Image (cartoon, rainbow, N blue to C red):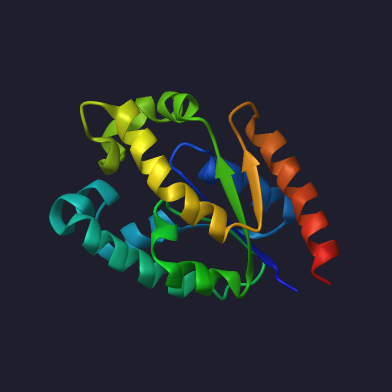
Length: 176
């Protein structure tokens, strides 16, 4: 039986906030993949993007995903683009139930508005258009990767965590 949970989804869907609450509720270790990447690189995500581009960042992400993929009893908050490299999902799937968090473009725009500088892919003039284009491109990757999908648009963090717990119980009853 899988003992870990990996949260995937677009930026601003609540992965980090929900992972912290879920880890506490389920008494599991909390792991944030972006923090591991920053630790390995010795610099922030925006700095990695500036210096090494998205390709350099994705390489570090693959290494970090490999490092945490086999962890037991963990809740892993993954970066929004992790699904773009199938190897990441294949590795996580071995020990993790993969939960995709979704939200509407309007909600994502609102949630990410305050931290634009920390979101290299949203450092553009038309953030709404950028969000919609990235979502359209990534949606099939998220859907193909997920065991459970939860829309967080109208839910607070506690409600999302509760939905995940319920989804995990249903998932486990089908995969025994």
